[in-house]
Length: 195
Image (cartoon, rainbow, N blue to C red; front, top):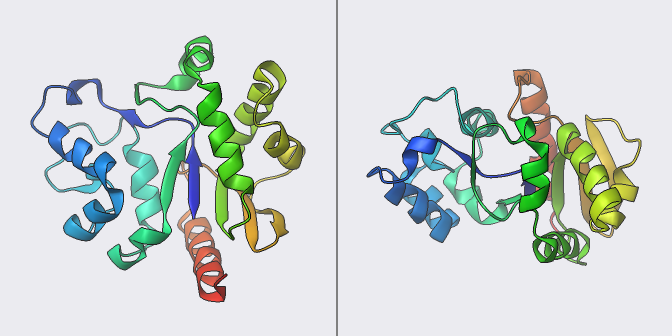
């Protein structure tokens, strides 16, 4: 499963704090982190010391509601459009967001998405708009943009050769428990079907 987001968003206060070590541990080996702590992300640890209403906390709280377990850790990868972490709301300064984009990283991401290995790729409606803009202005992610053009969130956009590209709703915003439950069932069905 490739869970694609805009950016890895952190509290500005995290740098220099003791908890930063947990962030480094997570980025060094996400599978090991999830297995060791029973949580897929440091934001969900009981000792997370920052405001849980900011940064990417809501995103990961919503993902956690689908109740995947540490044994599922090898199946998931969170991948971002930006290859650098951010603080604050990236939509507040779109010019900065576009200056931070790395063309090689985006080419790698598109190659990963369309490589022949079966996979479930989750994008969201906010991301779809961003991908369309990146494609127009930076001439990268063009294949993904063309595929997503005009699609509506809430279902698969493409199912081919064992790969599903699913246009969903952003975990960063308010999403219903019913939506999360349904998405979780869809992902579990994909896993159960195997390659």
